[in-house]
Image 1 (cartoon, rainbow, N blue to C red):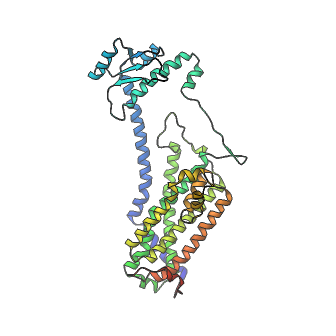
Image 2: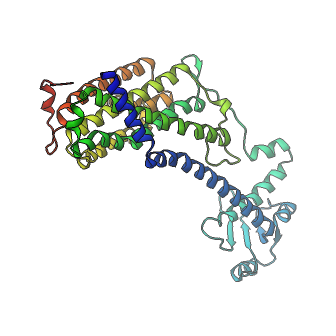
Length: 410
């Protein structure tokens, strides 16, 4: 009978959740927003490049060179001509008949290059810095006479190989999957937390819990509700995973690429089975712990409004590790790092962060897992016990002393 009731409640909650338009609107909004951001970033980068190219095609400027570095052919290629009268060239810019005037000092290493140019707006006026920089740097590179030296002035290609404990470390490629589970945990709590509170409290507010509990045990009812939320969370995870992989494959994990940055390709992602398993277990345990805690809050609070206030504090506690990210990521032995790693509410987040940044040892990871799952078990026990008493406490806030009372039917 209990198994039948469990499946009945589970299927009811799943249908009620998955058939709600707001669920899919919330679920699809994040991937849609990611797609919009990527598209806007690509469009913005393309438009900026086109604007810079078109501006470069039509720019005309005059210059004076006290250093003797500027090469005439480089200046001509960029659209520049020598100024016979610097004051007149500045006046032409001020009158709008000349785009820019560049004055190169005798020692451009210590003295700034002076630029007088047409105002192109706050964001677009940076092109004049690029123009003057290119005028001087290209001229200097040309005078070197060695093509290799010219290329070195534009940047040195490098590769980085890091080692830890006698083995090559994964670096950025090894942080992708743990970071994905961290983001997924945040998304699951933020998007499903309020729903978990609602399905715990709404029957109590609607005065229908007494009728429900005449045919089903509180333990079966609440465990079915929790299972329904977990399944709904897994559906959301699948919805997030597909566009995330597409975004990673097309952009290399970057919203915009530039000549000075190298996107991270799919082939560079390191899948460490141990790290991946730890991240997955932390995600499941962390989500289960926060879900059980929300059930406890919903069982104690008399209304959804009261429960929502407590949910805000819970979310704030989740974000505590983010405020100390540099410390957690770089100083694993510090007191703050150790506290947020082993404190139950912050352990899933802090441990995921350390796992992604490579500062988490195997014993620390196992200890954090034990803490998270032990806390989850205790909270589930408390949730079932409190739900049985709190589900019919319509107008009063249930006291935690109800945990000591014997259950009539659990």
